[in-house]
Image 1 (cartoon, rainbow, N blue to C red):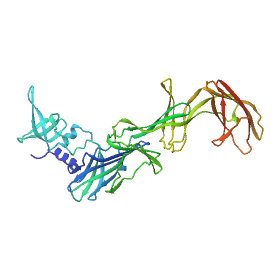
Image 2 (image 1 turned 45 degrees about the horizontal axis):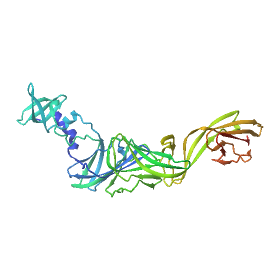
Image 3 (image 1 turned 90 degrees about the horizontal axis):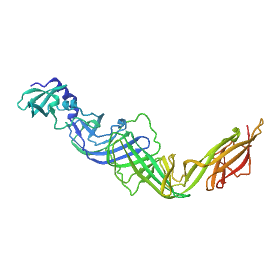
Image 4 (image 1 turned 30 degrees about the vertical axis):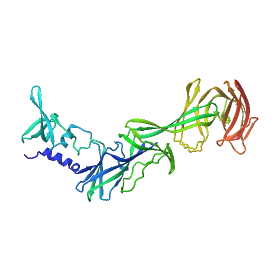
Length: 453
């Protein structure tokens, strides 16, 4: 019987896949670098067995969120890469029917009112709900396409996100190939737990939270995290290179931090599973008995622009001593213990922090400390601003407090500050007073400010 035009068309559409080689499903070496900018770098190595007659390679199970213009593939010298497509076919009955034309299938036929029989057939053509099949007796019959039973999914039908490389093969080749590509929708962020242990000591624990929405699950993968601000552009240039030796990541006894090219990389010392649409937490930092300093800080208004009296809240900080480890940006949550209970005190965001850099963690506003700024007198003239201010620091708590009072001021060569309270300049033009206030008491002092207009 002459093949139907529909069957011929289907064969032509599937022709490239009929001469395709699919790589081994087993991954020999895989790694993933996750960035804190919603991207990841995937590295995989798989075994390829391809014949000279085959015209394409199907690389299955790449991430749905792959950046196709970032692909970096290593092929043997006997293979020349001509072009590339990214394909992701959702499995449907129509695609199964199309891929099964001229192949053996089974069909379920009604034998009598309550009984069916299943017979082997060859699918010749289909159109919508109707299909033509040939029996083993070479009879051509019409059946409903819904009655066709598929024993397997044809190899040429791609059901997973895949790369298809169109190639020229000089000789039969069996060799491993390496693939690197960028993916979107994968990210990590850092979270820290600061446990206050008394007045001058604390412990710090760091966690990384990896969120994977790339459309691919990663199994038993070597994971690294890159902290830093990577420059990105809209377009990427595709790259192709010949087979080279690829670096193999080694495990360590603990999470290792490596400074590299202006960034910091954290290598996880064990294999990790990252399911799609899942968040995974990994502990990467544990520091005990860290020296800390408690700080109570308030910044008031510039005295040259104040009229009247204002009350300010005092913010509580914990200053962590300089650590030997760099910290990726993230959120530090502060806790303490009270009569056996854990109390959450507040949280603060930190930027990427180099090692040997003190960290100021904002906890919250003090309930018991207030600062009042009062204008006593203004005596401005055509050349100078002149202001007399009073600062009243109130401590309603049961313990002595050291309060850091910061006053923005127009610091110039001929500016004047007159007061009996000791001060210095910080952050450029910030007049800074450190004042001790006894429990359940207040302390006041006055300052004269003078600055040229």
